[in-house]
Amino acid sequence: FSVTLLRLRVFKKAKNGKKMRLFLPTGENSEQPLNARGTLFVLLFRSSLALVLLSQMLFRLITAFFTLFIASFICPAAAQTGFGVLRDTFCSDQNVVVAGQVFNAARPSGTVVLPGAASNGGDSTVVVDLLYTKPVEIDYTITLCEGDTVFFNGHAYHAFMKSGTEVFPGVPCDSVFRVKVNALPAPFSYVRDTLCPNDFIMINGTVYDKNRRAGYEIIRNGSWRGCDSIVAIDLEFRSSWVYAGEDMEVIKGDFACITPVYGFEPAKVEWMPYAPCADSSCIDSCFRVTDPVVFTLIATDPDGCILVDDIRVLISRRNRVYAPNVFSPNAYWPDNYFWLNTDGAVVNIRRFVIADRWGEILYEAANLTPNSPEYGWDGYFRGKAMMPDTYLFFAELERYDGTVFQHQGGFSLVR
Image (tube, rainbow, N blue to C red; front, top):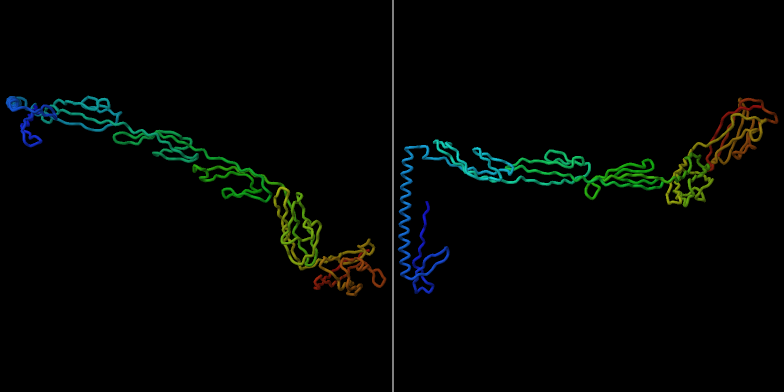
């Protein structure tokens, strides 16, 4: 039932505080002033109306009380009924069935009566009030470099697996990710160049020279996007060359000759630590060697390439003395004399002696010029030709620096 409240405001003081007026509420927020007679009439009318309404309400309450009291004796199960409310949240694609009635996003609420479902055998009323939400769907783009792999929800995505759908279970709705892979190709570049024969370049820590002219390098995180870069290397080398000569061992004080060979017309020639000859080209130039030395030849070709080669000149303390092991007085000049050939460090043969096997001296000379056949032995002793046999020789030789050494041996005379 409903109860109507009668709002009456009889007196209200005017703003000036002197004169009294009566007001009758006529609307929600308005009041209409009345005179005294009209006000009394309204009050009497509304009082009568209120008494009538109160009488009707009292009658209805008494009737309802007796009805329930009698019904409790006739049908105790009808005196009480079950009542429940079903409130929950579901995904928009889900259906909920309550006592055979289907509730979904199109019908989220309603009332269901369950006959005899109450604990005392009465009917039960279920008020269904469901909230439906939409599933979360997200377009997810993964940007990665070719060759890289990213795992999303336990699944691998890469350049050969560029798309997929991943579902993350949730309440009330699952989250759906539509995955798309944006694979960035690895930047590719070439390094092509022609280098001088002894030049090299280093790329990614690898040295490329004439022994390793081509290859590929992967530069980690080399691109501006952070991906690896691939560099292909292809080098060529000019064919210029220079050869200073074979290393040599020279007797101290002897002469060494250096004849460099060029595979081009040199634009510039330098020697380190100094030039071994007056002409820096050193074509057929010889010099006396007194100390071991390493000469470095630096030549520049017409293209500006610098070619370098070394030649080592070593010192030997053992002088070279050559004596024939057989000679014949009947041979042609100079082989018809037995004489000594020495290196350039020997400047004088102080003494030269030839004897037979019994030690008799057959020839002796002093202060001879080395490498001079005319100062050798002609195979005669006291004007008589010596018989074929084995003979001995002894020599005392002087070097350019005044030091002296000895050399001896044997030879055969034939006719």
